[in-house]
Length: 511
Ligand SMILES: [Zn+2]
Image (cartoon, rainbow, N blue to C red; front, top):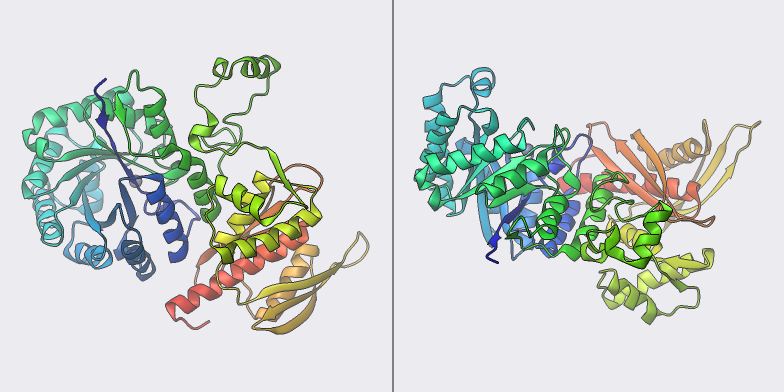
């Protein structure tokens, strides 16, 4: 059967990073970009450089470091935005400037306060300017789905004639309905003959839960690039989910004769990484990557799957890289066994990294009888989230109970020096945090605190996630994993504090 390629444009680092409460530093963005490249996306939209010096810095880091993929930067249709975007991506192997302007009457009237002719002029000028820097220019008509079709077609035609090689039609507010949106895409292609020189792209939001359905309808009607994010994160209700659109195309080739360059086995790992670094958990019933996506609860279903998997499973979980939960390693397992298992889970370690991992593994195996794949993943994820440890946890003591005031004594190491303080609090965790504040001299606001059991059983690993906000309004996510939840709490808080300190160093700000 003849199959056509659909390009996957990932905007996890731009639209996804605009999710409320999410803030990634440059190193975290780089880690995600590297994984996206491994996943096989065609384009990584790395950020929106004009919005902050930090974002610009992160985009240039990705442009320099990540090869074998197009790196795009977003810019409004203005000279300064486009020049700043180019500054950030000029070292990329394949740089793309993505410029946009709104085309709906509602945006023209209330937001831009511009008439239609001016919008066309601005779009053309923006594309022409971007074209001076790079041949690969994408133009987006913001709020396209609520725009007048004839006017939108005029803008699209002008943008293509000015040199745009990709035209993106966003459903910015998630208002479209699949059949209507598919029709809309078909009409644009019919009415703008020069579209044979450009790729038509869509960017759908999920306000009505229709982002994936709308994107599929667009593909059926001629779109050949889809903009999407890992776990569907993004502004408000989020974007079209990468894993869902890719697996829909893969699983239903019979009715959707299209393919993508995605290595599906990397999906699960990417989802975990993004969820960990953004601090946005994946809902258990999320399609493809949710904890329950391949669990069978009813006896009838379990019985069926045991007899023949395809009775109740339309995809093999291995296909999306979900590790099988086998109990594998224990206290007597050696370095070689650990290395092999980590390799199967997708972690290729250097000798030095393996040594470090082995020490951690031994400590864990001493506390737990059996070390599962999930334990190993939790351990490795803690490892990759590392920032320089200005402060590390040496020890802590707690005295608490129903009739006494909780008191914590905490010992931290800073460049080999041992620092100790004691403090009281409303509870044991509060007491630990106050003692840490005394030592570090910082007092960030604890915006969020949550505990999750990573694995099951009495000796399960617990993961604590905290969100800390400093005086400048900067929010960081800190994580800690341990079989003891107070220790996990202390580690998470310190991880957050170390991140805040690391950011100050990167930006050269004074504390
Ligand atoms: Zn968007």
